[in-house]
Image (cartoon, rainbow, N blue to C red; front, side):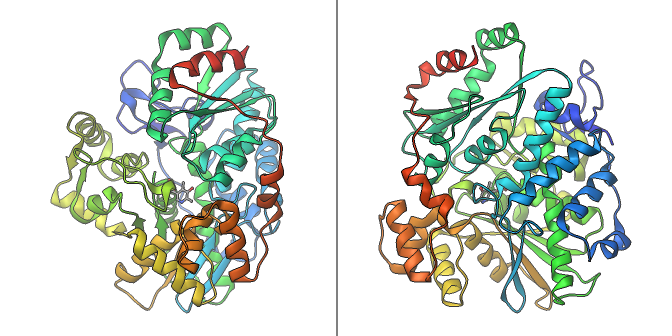
Amino acid sequence: MKFIETRGNDGTSPASVTFSEAILSPMSSFGGIYSPESLPDLGEYFLKCHVDQDYKTLASNILTAFNIDIEDSVIAEALSLYDHFDDATNPAPLVKVKDDLYVSELYHGPTRAFKDMALQPFGKVLSSLAQARNEEYLIMAATSGDTGPAALETFKDRENVRVVCLYPDGGTSDVQRLQMVTEDADNLKVIGIHGDFDDAQSALKLLLQSDTFNAKLKEKNISLSAANSVNFGRIIFQLMYHIHSYLELVRQDAIKLGDKVYLDVPSGNFGNALGGYYAMKMGLPVEKILIASNENNVLTSLINNGLYDISDSSVIATTSPAMDILKSSNVERILFDMFGSERTKELMQQLDTDKRYQLTDSEIAEMQKVFVADYCSDAEGSQYIKDAFADGYLMDPHTATCFKTYDTCRDDKSLKTIVYSTAEWTKFSPTIAEALTGQAGSSDIDALKAIASEAGISIPDSINDLFSKEITQSVVIDKQDIEKEILAFLS
Ligand SMILES: *Cc1c(COP(=O)(O)O)cnc(C)c1O
């Protein structure tokens, strides 16, 4: 399987690349990204053959269908990382919450958020490729929460890859910060920045464009890669759980093989939703994909009226911060798949220059064949958390946004809905504690205790232990000192 560029080819770089090239150097001509040239057609027979198979077998056979240039032994090792999830046989359990609403829990990995589903195997694959080529890679990430801990965790002590993670000091939850600053490995560097997430992200952008910085990396024979969700190496591991959740519904006798379902996805950078879209194109019986957003509702507008407009908006801080995003990177792969590279390049250029683009009526119709969208305010989300808890289900504020789309976006009420839960309650505890008890402003540890007592459960050890672990990454600096700090770490 080859990968091609969403904005077409500029004539100087190769017109198509292998999977390993696409994941080692994910940026392509004109600022585009790599997408699969075609998708394997799995069909109903494939689904039927996997009803009685476990997650790893399913994942492995999907990768085989993609025919990627990764050795079987590396794939096997990468997938064996799912053995460390809560249930070694089922990393993503499906839980019934209402007669027609099932929650696919994607947060049972080491950092308690769904980023582990893809980053765990991805880290192993990337490091093995770097090792086989005898090349050194640097991955830099600016994080406001979940990507940082998951990226650090997957690359910890891995060969030939170093990770630098920038976070806004005071701009993450206590649990997220502690997950990063207690990471102890020679190949990891965590840097707190005085400022907010935008400051951290713009500092990273400047550095990536800096000639002196790039020259220094070259001198040291270090190449840059990326672990964000524009990297197809992450997306490929996000197809599987959509197919797995569907098969779980069959196993639980909730549907018959071939019945259609709704997929209901809390969306930010659109990696999760893109995985669902590819699964649908590969033959998974999906009626529609429901796109849930918070008040940063660019995706709702895009799908409902074809307008992507960030010209006079700034990011709103919500209680579902992993979805506080205006430029949703993976939408580009949908545009490319539906409308081709020429149109995608045009639209993305408009977004760069005018901060907006408008789809035509026929393009909107095409979009709406697959997607339906709505957004959920913080107050609505809080009510959904409270109501679900009263029904016996504890969920986080990102997952809660899907309960709004479940209420407002389904035409066929006879079909089952799979809601994707992207974080454990432990990661966003102050918001959940407030929804359940009415008490605002608790610290993470007090909120964790309040929820545990309210729900009659205990705080998981992996979270509780963070509060007494040694802080090994204590650097907090001004933006202008980042380059120096990173270069010192690399020598
Ligand atoms: C990353 C993240 C999301 C958004 O997922 P995308 O694939 O970027 O759309 C939603 N919820 C949580 C908790 C996340 O960490």
